Image 1 (cartoon, rainbow, N blue to C red):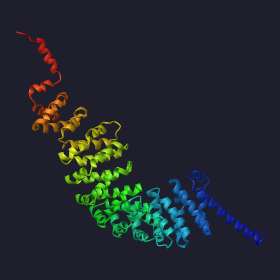
Image 2 (tube, one colour; image 1 turned 30 degrees about the horizontal axis):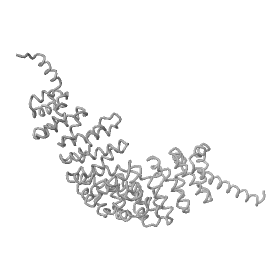
Image 3 (tube, one colour; image 1 turned 90 degrees about the vertical axis):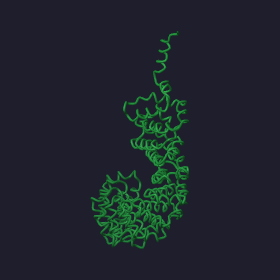
Image 4 (cartoon, one colour; image 1 turned 180 degrees about the horizontal axis):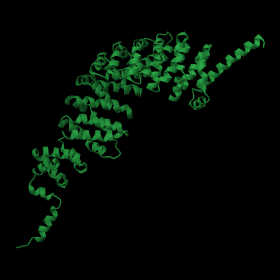
Amino acid sequence: MSQRETIRAFEQYQRSRLEFVQMVADRASRPQNIETLQSAGTMALLRPLILDVVPSIQQTAALALGRLADHSIDLAEVVVREDILLHLVHSLPSKNRFFKKAAAFVLRAVAKHSPGLAQAVVACGGVDAMVLCLEEFDPAVKEAAACALCNVAQHNELLAQTVVDAGAVPLLMLCFREPEMALKCIAASALCEICKHTPELAQAVVDTGAVPHLAQMILNPDAKLKRQVFSALSQISKHSVGLAEMVIEAEIFPAALICLRDPDKYVRKNVSTLMREVVKHSPELSQVIVNCGGMSAVIDSLGDCQGSLRLPGIMMLGYVATHSENLAMAVILSKGVHQLALCLSEEPEHHIKAATAWSIGQIGYHTPEHAKAVATANLLPRLLRLYMEAGSSDDLQVKSKDALKSILKKCTYLPALEPLLYDAPSNILKHVVCQFSKVLPHDCTARRLFVTSGGLKKMQEIDAEQGSPLQEYINIINSCFPEEIVKYYTPGYSEVLLEKLENYKLT
């Protein structure tokens, strides 16, 4: 074989390797090809190619591996078993930016599936390698590295702590200074995943000055960035009063309220989530949000969305109302009860109905005035129906029952209570009758209406166990009326009168 033929053979070999990895990378991007590639033993064929002498072959082989690992946990586990991660990480320092980006993609794809696979990325030195990639000049490499770290941190406290201990947080903060919007987004997302686990991890992020940097981006025109920023602020705020106060002190509000009218529905949802996480901690934090117009803005936004997008706002109203009578009255005066009534009737999902029932209960349990506001919105029969329906989830039944009981204990508005006399089971009925026994002895007009509306008649029809609290309440009510009226409405009394008529003899 001549020298030219030898060179041609090597060129053909190189060309074939490149064509092969390009074909695999292209086909791996389409899910319908994955099974065929897997059954053909593609992983084992790609493994030596990530160490190829030709950079373009290395990079494309890594890209193909990343796409395969991204597809399923089974393929990601094959990448780990074949020791591919170790080869990628060890060769990173000597490689160019294109290979580093592709290698970060493989680590990201493996780490996303499970804590065990994320731990495999840690074990091979992948986290430290990605932190070094955050110091690269190329923003695309930084973005890929941040995404890999995000996928590691998302799983649990231990993995997130590993990312923090590797020194990632300050470098993620520096990404906010870069002009590339995608890099800012993934940096905010990574901080969010770190913060969500524990107060200590959230504090570690806050200590780097993250809150002011995030606050500066809440009005950025990019919707994806705003989503991640508000999500990160929510994860910081949720852990403690102190962390929530730091978010408030960064003057997030009232500027963030503008985003409740954002065209992007997930931006609106994440703003509501942030407000929910702030107000749940204390009356003082709730009052801050109320004073800046946040509660009214959330109530308005509930009318413009559906489904899960409503959930944070619904719960936010409940948390505000929980803290005090005044805050609950603020929800009522802002027409929050009306909006919650609409949510209860419009939403088909049981978990959303359950949250709505809980919030209604938090509003109505304070005083008779609060309970009346809920009762006049015709919410008591709805709560009763949700509690009694066999198709309601266990959580919905419990939340509806608890809300109903807590409101009934304060409700003295009898016109709203009377319909429940006919439909409520005994465990609810005793609370309804109890309220009548408290009001009727002191209200002459109410006693008259109770008779003319049929309430007294219904009271005599209730089958209560002797000596039970229910029977005691009935006895108190009966004592408010002349004995002959009570007898008149007692079942069977008409037959007694007829019998007397038959036995009556004219003198």
